[in-house]
Length: 374
Ligand SMILES: Cc1ncc(COP(=O)(O)O)c(C=O)c1O
Image 1 (spheres, protein in one colour):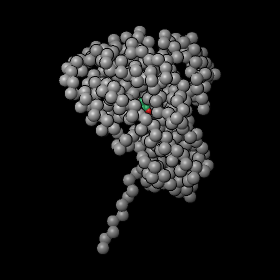
Image 2: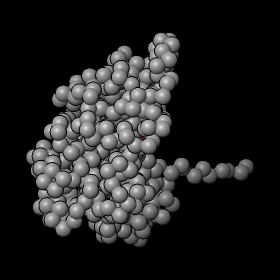
Image 3: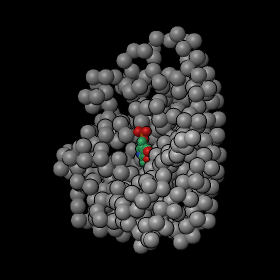
Image 4: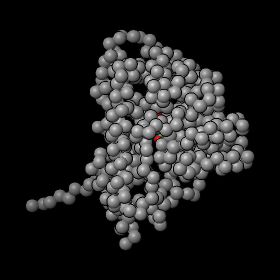
């Protein structure tokens, strides 16, 4: 009899997205039915530039509650998620050839968006409290950036959160040099029990700071719905883009469904469920790493999606082929670098797999690492 060997599917720790089983199809069915039953044609027009007022009001109420800090609907604008909002900020607030500052390391796909806009990127080092202020001040003295991009809560890739005192220092330093701060807060609401400091835009309503939020990580990325939070004068500049003037306010139909999701109390329920699942997955991944790779260096995250793991003496890029042979994958540190750094570091996401798969993935990683040295 012929036996068939099944190759185990790759466990890809690079996937920074929820498992299909976590996507809230039932809650969205309820919200969509509620929304469609209203037969309200308002949501099917070209959208208002800022977004539909009922959605912005419901979002302001939701954020005020979940941030425990006041958010006014006049400070919100609907977007198609943080990637699109970031690109729109680049379109409206930078010119090709400009310099912008980012954290080193930073979200690799944001680097691709900046490249699309012809921007020169300068990386500012971080530590366990986020961007280092002396390095930022030195860089501000040496360059004239038009924008600073930061991921303050549970950063991608490191999981680090910008501390409250650094937030104030960062805003003050950028204000002194008239630099726009764009805070990508896609993980702001995904804490595992201890919320991060408030959203950057809640620090100073008149500052040149825009906080970008999204339903991608707190509900479902396929919604392509998010928001920009900031001073109305800055939002006005985004609304005056050709994109919004031609196509109207962004994503009105989906914002109608999400309006129902929020007002029916389902957005809270979905978010609370996700937080419990991610907290458990993060715990399982870190425990498995400690057991199987005791010399791996990492800080256990307190929110977000990622663990940033240093394997001293190992080139993450060179480890990848052995890892794939063992049935596991990840993003290597250099993908997140603005220069030649993080060669021995791996970004592991715990969002995409259940506990058993996470443990199995770590076993495979440990095996790959052993074979790398043999
Ligand atoms: C830091 C960061 N910004 C933005 C995104 C994408 O956000 P959105 O789906 O809202 O475009 C991600 C997704 O992984 C992310 O990690």
